[in-house]
Structure formats: C-alpha cells, structure tokens
Length: 109
Image: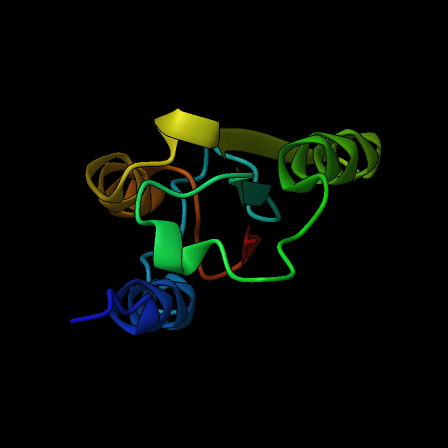
C-alpha cells in the first residue's frame, strides 16, 4: 500500500483555515502580527513520496522565502529535512494559538 500525503495536506489546510478563528491578542500585543511556518523536505522517509521528479532545493527555498518574509516583518519558524516529522509539524500547528491571531497573518508553506 502506497503512503499517501493527503492527510497531512488536509491538516495544513485545516490549520490555515482555523488561524482565522483564533482569538485576538491582548492589548499588550501587536494586533497585526505576521507569522509563517515554513516546511522544506528534500528527501522523504517514505521513498514513494520522493517521486520521479522531486523538488531540487526545498530546504534552501524555505530558508530564502523566510529571509524575504522576515524583511517584510514576519516572524518565521522552520521545519527542515528530518526535523519536519509529522509529530513536529502537528506540534508547531498546535502552537499557532500563541503566535497567530485573527487580526494578523498566518502563512503555512
């Protein structure tokens, strides 16, 4: 049976949607906070997910995108390579409630 990446993709979409419903920040916090969780994996644990034509430099791309986003005022967290496990991704997604607010921007990529 082939490993399917669909469930985790649906989780990303669900969390991105839920970011818009998170409670707003307290008056001491910046209401327009920008946050990004960037994930890049060059080689997956499950070989069938690597495909015949894999992305060339996803980890470096995530770092470069993060650098540009930081210049635009974003706080960026990264999960790269072997650190981008299902468990760690879920942990970071659950942690969005302390970093993303309905008045701000939350990007997951």
